[in-house]
Length: 206
Image 1 (cartoon, rainbow, N blue to C red):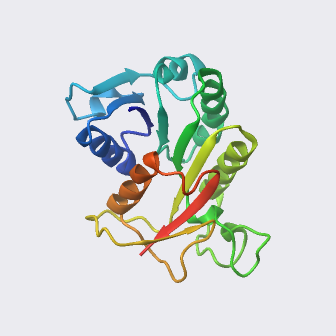
Image 2 (cartoon, rainbow, N blue to C red):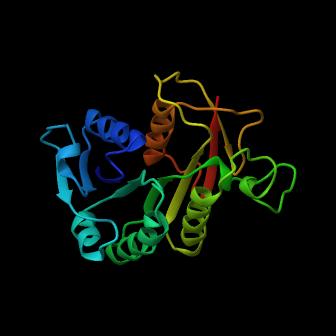
Image 3 (spheres, helix red, strand yellow):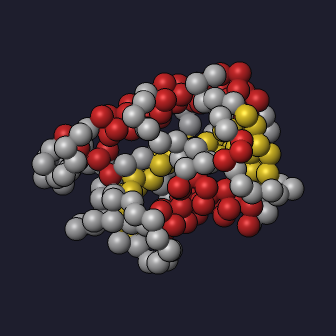
């Protein structure tokens, strides 16, 4: 399978690259700073570019089967500004499947069903700027023709894969407080071959 990974220099993105290569997929990454990719592999194509430039996305999307996006907010609007371009190019290229990393804040509230968690007291985060970026991406994907899945981890510490965790469509599993980067990457990678959560968010926690 030909897989494009966006956000490949981040914590989850880096693990996704390793997992995809381990299973002998061909991996393309679009990165601003190629030197940050420390992997040298025959099945890895590194394209220098920016997700805010449509031409760069077009180059990266050529021949791709699945897109994995682990783009972070990084205090900017890159996430929400790039997604319309990503969706547009995918639709033009006929690429259907995209799996992205979101945040538990954009899952539904259990106490206020018509609200998202970050809009209620369920979310303990004081700042909502990052979650608002993810909310914009969620809205954009809902309006697209793509087969999307948004993996929504709660607190995301580094750490080894435990291999046992709970997932729930559109909600954070009850009393879930954290999930490691490794297990988030593991579940996200597993969705490449799964149609269980098409056009839905998935909460993930221990």
